[in-house]
Length: 289
Length: 314
Image 1 (cartoon, one colour):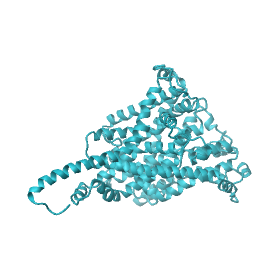
Image 2 (image 1 turned 90 degrees about the vertical axis):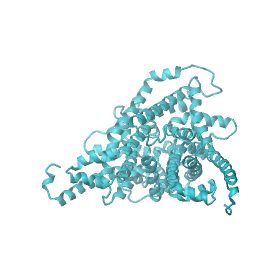
Image 3 (image 1 turned 60 degrees about the horizontal axis):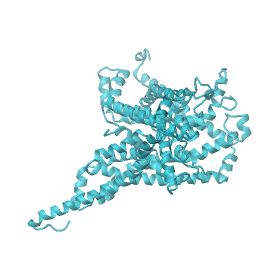
Image 4 (image 1 turned 45 degrees about the vertical axis):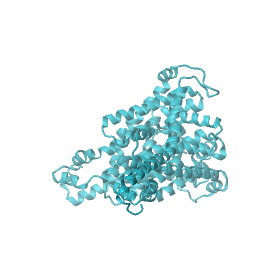
């Protein structure tokens, strides 16, 4: 602001705070309005969406929500998504903490080489790799391991592509545990496994929670892998089902909005409860490196 | 450990437990690495080699690949107009992200800052779109961008201000910009979060000292804060570029790469050939190009920025 220095200090501060808030609230609106419009549409009848599309729902109509929750389709998708998410998260946490432990705490020939191999995965995201990965799944399927059109295929691919980033995050946390602790444990007669299981993992609980939270979100939101792997309707996950639902009932905006809103609710609830873990996991991976 | 052994036994004991320990260590190394290694080699590394092989064939996916065409796929891709559009679009998204999205995120991070009352509220709201799935984001915005002002909220606003409704996703000139707006909506909160964390790691004394020495707010930001955020910015730029190169779901749901390929990205291009037209050899070659772009960018970027940050060890 020109001439701002002519004003008294306290007024300058108040003014600058005021402009901060105006700008921030503007951005809040931009973030929130699309979500609010979706919820509005979800709580109207099909006719109301046509006649008064942008007003708050008056009165609130629960019919669309009831239609979706009353059927079996939504619950089936929810179940599939849950199965995939839980197995993937358990797999990622276990497999990555094992590998990260070796990279953080053990010495062996070729360690640098092996670690670099895993970091290669960061440069090869699933969106780039999906077609080659599909070939491998198909080959395994032909060899008798049911990978195509099965949740197992989705699960292994999601785990495989979550390895690099999460090993990196966990290795950072494991390295930060002081070496004296390890020496003390060994002197007291701990085996390597004891140290890992009884000392390191309990210490790394916050890190494991972050990795779990991030993996849950990534798996829950993933569309590409199920889109490519799954055909059968009963195996659709929530994102895949949401997309297909829109394709099928696209004309009934109220019903589709209700479906989309419902499929967003689990994520938002999870976000409210796990925000700390999500935030610390992301920033640990990216800022510390 | 048992009781202290007599002196002559010490050397023997040490030696014995040493080899035992080494064996134990090796066992742990092998067993602990094995699950990760198997999954990684099978589903990340092996596919790369396999797609290199298939990219040399004209292959529709039925039976074994027999129609060997050498490097024809790679040559044909380079002269395909649509591929070049996809490449250009990727480049635009990268440039827009670096020039608009990241500075916006930085501005918001500085505004929210360290001590603004309500900072947790703002952080929570700004980060929310990042947590929502791309499917939900895409559908939500698809509704908003509906060209009919009776159905699309944005055109309702445009009409309210007396202008003509805009065919947001139907106009080849602006469709990419429109998609970029959605990308920004979804991802600015993530970058803001990185910057916020970076800001917190900078001791306030530094900025205070600069202020005392007579620097104004802008000077202190550009001379002190920004350089100290170097590592964070490097990471954020890296993630933004890699993310831009592989953009898929949002584009696929909102426009399928259209109209007339105007919003095609490398990932939608690959998906179309791989999973819609089943030209798997050609699609593999596209995947190889994308992979090369990612790897070359990563390596050059590492070299230029000199400090291994996100890719520690490379």
